[in-house]
Amino acid sequence: MNVKIIAIGNPIMMDDGVGISVVKELEEWLIKKEIEIIIGETDMDYCMDYIVDGDFIIIIDATNLGYEPCHVTTCPIRELDDDYRSGYSQHEMSILKGLTLYRKKVEGYFIGIEINTIKYGFELSDILQRGFMCICDNVKEEINKILRGSINA
Image 1 (cartoon, rainbow, N blue to C red):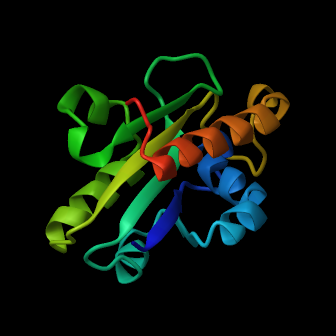
Image 2: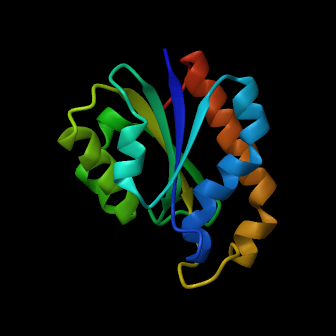
């Protein structure tokens, strides 16, 4: 099974780039786990070029689901319902639509990191900066659960 992490977000829109920041922080650990890293930013077509049938993908991106900032949410891609999707940014919708449009036969999970601020800026909001290492630890824990097959989403 080919496992691929897809980091989505806009790094010039503050917290919208949190998924990219987390994946870059975990890069060495992910490489040791033999997980391919795709920094997709906001380019769905770029991501689709690296996804092939049979891949197991984990999409990591910012969410706005009404939780406290820094909260990490995990859900199997195939179980995402309309209520859950409505809290996603445009990126996940594009990726999910792209998987259908390109008829990619993949399984996987979405890991969302709750945001605080989306506006022009190159840094995460203060609250996400303060909680960044905890966010990384939580995402790492979720990835480990997914890889062990023991995720309870």
